[in-house]
Length: 366
Image 1 (cartoon, rainbow, N blue to C red):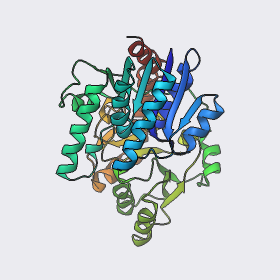
Image 2 (cartoon, helix red, strand yellow):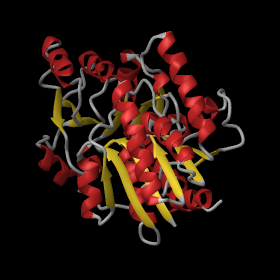
Image 3 (cartoon, rainbow, N blue to C red):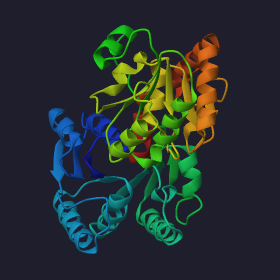
């Protein structure tokens, strides 16, 4: 089949990783091209993997009537020229514009992959209403919808046009080589005798990192180190907070680290304090690395973590609960190790790349 996979941004967050995994897997037996805005890491990785790419520089996340109309006609022209059998759309902007263009171009299979919904972000009531209306149109124009978690599916079902089209396909990861604890710490510049809490995340308001930083101020664990791997728009705010709280000796922002999951064993605990999540890759990676996990009970996270069985779940925006959970793990490392082992077994069974690809191929072949 000829398949075009489209995504709004070409950085390398969770949705972009999904696009890369799907494109490289389907590209082995199909004619696959990936369409995106910008020239980020996703573009580089796809080209290195031999996947054909189509760049639309004017495609961006922000709403711009002039640019969006131009993008629509550019995509329509591309689709009429390419004549794909399948159009897979990832993210809100390309979902709306792309599904409409797909209908005009008479693409038979238009699949929208819901990695999350923009109305879960901190927005006004009117903005959320408009977003839900636009998502409903995306559902209408799509022929199938993939939700990456049951939580996302349940939210989608509150809107029209989704009920007969939607299926859940969990994100999955492939077995990958991991650095040993000592090697990972050495590479990251972390003391070998520190008690390390780690987060791998984009520095974005939705990740709830200020609450984690405040939790570090509340803790008096000897040699405590909180390490954040990732880059993003809130770096300056987070650095200011660390400085104002005078906890620079506890908290370090390491910036973007390529293939960050390889370093997971550097952490004694993996912490994800997100305010909203669809189905987070880094939690799955922490489970694969057998690192004990503390995460907020939001979105699809409880579908990965069973509280007090494969990790600890806490409420979002609650620094005291983060601190208490870390303290509990520190004082009960045998139980924490048991949580990590259970999560590892669950990841191997439910969140493998092979399972994700198999389930996706069934939907594409409908």
